[in-house]
Image (tube, rainbow, N blue to C red; front, side, top):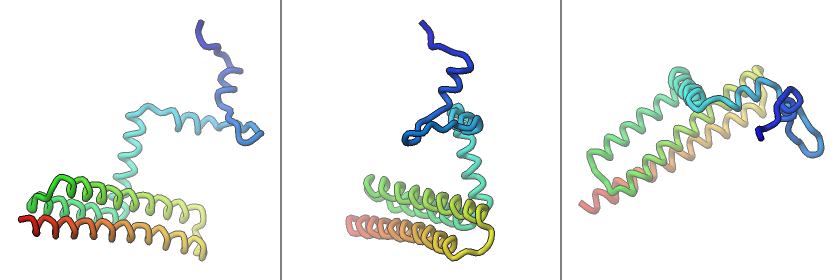
Length: 150
C-alpha cells in the first residue's frame, strides 16, 4: 500500500509542533528546505562568491591561506601539520563567512547605528581574530617543528 495523499495529507506534512502549539510552515520555507543537493551546492557557491566580491577581509584571508599552503609545500612538514593547518585555514574562512553574513543581516534589520548591534559586530570580529591568531600559532609551531627536524 502506498502513502495516503491529497490536500489534507499535504497540509498535515507542512505543520510542525512547537511546544504544545502547531504552527504552519510557510510554503517558501518548505520549498527552501527541500531543494535538491546540487541547487543547495549552487546556492552555497553563490554565497562564497558574494563574500569574495564584497568582503576585502575574506579575500585577504584566502590569500593568506594560499600563501601558508605554498610555504607548507616548500617546507614539507609532517602530514599532521598539513591536516592542522588546512583545518585552521578552513575555520578562519568559515568564521569570516559567518561574521560577514551576520553583520549583513544586522545591517539590514537595523540600518541605524545601535550600540547593541555594534557590540555584536565587535564580538564577531573578535571571533575571527581569535581564530586567526590560533591558526597563526599552529603555523608557527609547525614551522618551528619542521625546521628543528631538518
